[in-house]
Length: 350
Image 1 (tube, one colour):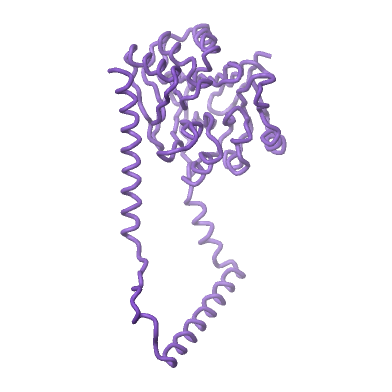
Image 2 (cartoon, one colour):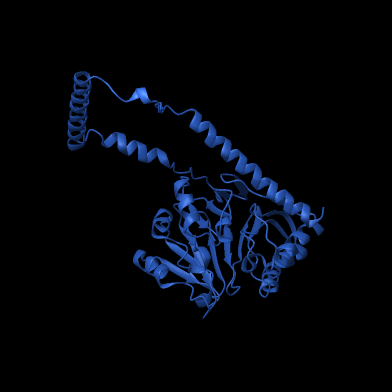
């Protein structure tokens, strides 16, 4: 299948989702109970006495409602109701016992992203660095003895995330490539698609809410939540991974609009580890999103003395105020977290 057909399929997938959302919106409007009043000339006037009595009746009812509500609030009669609504908005996921360990490798690829996850049941590579660091990603995996990837994820079509993906697809047997429902006109994107085709890699656009099981590690897709974004960063495939009692959120380069969507969608975000979005840029990791994740460990994939000034002071202030452990590729080199589902061991190259 030529690359233009793959791109067309991706676009068709996006269009189908747009139509689905549109239908949902139309049906929700149709089920509403609102009333519409006619705009004719005869609908506006009533007799004076009848009108005054109606107004007085509405005022009395309003006063009674306000009085009863204030009393209920004062004496705490609404507490149970309000708390019940809050608690049912986001359900805490059930913790499943696991065997073995999971390794989370945050590979030092400069001003780019590459995260490798290894469990007893498979492997997942999230992004593959840029074109320059692509060979480094291939070498890193080979040194670990990896010959096959269960999943490869190209979070979004920017070069610092998929620049080395074609090299990975050519060097390893990859079962499934996950990409968002957006194409790009760059040679980098075309190389990735061509490599997937040439190596018969199953290419999938994951739906939000879908679940991936990888040897006890359970990944839930929490973004994209919409079908149209002005910024490619906001297309980033984002996931929450759970392994026993240990959890992690990764968001690619998703920025504040995408973070707001994740919050508004009611996704359960609370996690031990947060791999900061967009290399610690001020465009990501807003305070509300950070508070929802509430991590104890933050990972920043960033290059030393990069031209963007990442990570930005505003983001570092959020981390410092929270008093959490921060690990950065520019300071620590390769970062490896190993967990048995309860404890987390952290090793760094420097």
